[in-house]
Image 1 (spheres, helix red, strand yellow):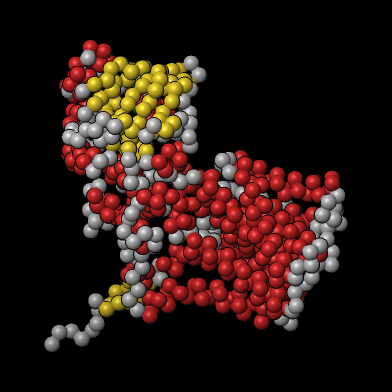
Image 2 (cartoon, helix red, strand yellow):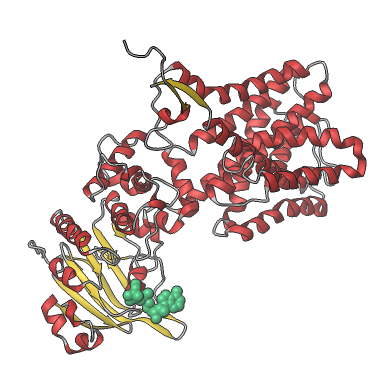
Length: 260
Length: 340
Ligand SMILES: Nc1ncnc2c1ncn2[C@@H]1O[C@H](COP(=O)(O)OP(=O)(O)OP(=O)(O)O)[C@@H](O)[C@H]1O
Ligand SMILES: [Mg+2]
């Protein structure tokens, strides 16, 4: 759980809705994220979590409502503009560059305008440098530097590494806010417990986080606030233990109580 | 004393050279350097010697240059299709725009070829890139079909409004000062395009372009504009295509609507398939096979196209990976004896 808490809002979502034809995937959701927060978003399958993220990051245009970052409205901006501002996301269905080695996957974000501007990566722009920085980031994410893993084609890597590669793309951009769409799912318990300290460490470095998770036990170790969605609507928001004891949340998650 | 016989085993030469990944090399001896350089040196030597060998036969000299022209259009196609993921049928568009641009610069403004060709290449590429900008979000067959329309549209516009010389085109365009100037100017440009692009695709900027082909959503999520990246790639491809067109019209001193002919969009695809897609060198080999072949087949009259089709089909069926990929594989299997 985050210790320093300044209550300075960095992301404000106001009455956001996204409708696909008749389907109200997200319906009138509001949420404020403060600097240094780790906000969890939970909800059953199809409750609109990914759609909400897509609306924040510009991959979808909301039907109604606004999103502001540092008080500036970013609703409907292009995804690369929003990423350039420091809101960086992972994809639930991982999207690596399969035809490239793992470390080259990170050379792409390291070549972005944002990385060039705020990166402060040692040495700056030269070819060899980005390769080294990429391997540095991978090492931080648990790719063993001296093994062949960072040099393996992304297409041959198991899920655990691909999830980390998603995080790596965010880190290469020196993010202010990372939005993780189910980074824990598909990982073994031991893999998750090795990722949890990493999340805590990143948060300790001052990176704000939004984490969509189905793995509630692990989520509650890192999150200081949780929002629950159901059928696109916000059910409740608050401290993890409040949310989990909320009758509607228990109802939505009925049958999976052993998770708590 | 132990046995005097030295034990030897066969070893692939490339094994020691390639460590960890395709892009990292470790060279330990002259043998290994020679192993890496031989194919490149052979390619360069072939094109450097070509004008010397063909100088007694100017007609075949021109055929040699047609190889370079088709090679440049094919490199442009291969780059867009296999590195950027834009399958373009607009080779004739690049070529025609470059050609007309050079013709106007030469006949109307009086620029000599040494200026008209580079200026037409730059302006033409800028024009082509702007014209294709609205199509950049399209993919696959949709991009292909729309780019196919561009050269057709150009011919119709030129005919209908009777502009740019109408159906007649431009005549009396300045030629080159001599046989060897003409030959080596184009050969040099082809090598610049070939080795320049091959180098570029392995640099970080080129990597971003390849990333767009692999996964454009991730590129967006990395804070990089996909449209801008594609536009840069299209500009590079149009530079290559426009140069070919501009050079060609100075060789033959005239330009007409045939500069937008469908062949110029289709032949690069054939050359790329034969030579090996995604290699940039393959298209040069493909062009070096297709152009002379089509010359030899002139005597066959209407059977020409049949033989041509058979050769193409043969390649697609028996060597669908393309010559270059086949030869690379074989070359990498070359072995040497090492003591153990
Ligand atoms: N592009 C789309 N077109 C139409 N409907 C969509 C689209 N994307 C999502 N939906 C619908 O919106 C609803 C919310 O989907 P979403 O993917 O946001 O859920 P989720 O909470 O992320 O689920 P999960 O836990 O399975 O990832 C679902 O009913 C889904 O079918
Ligand atoms: Mg989801």
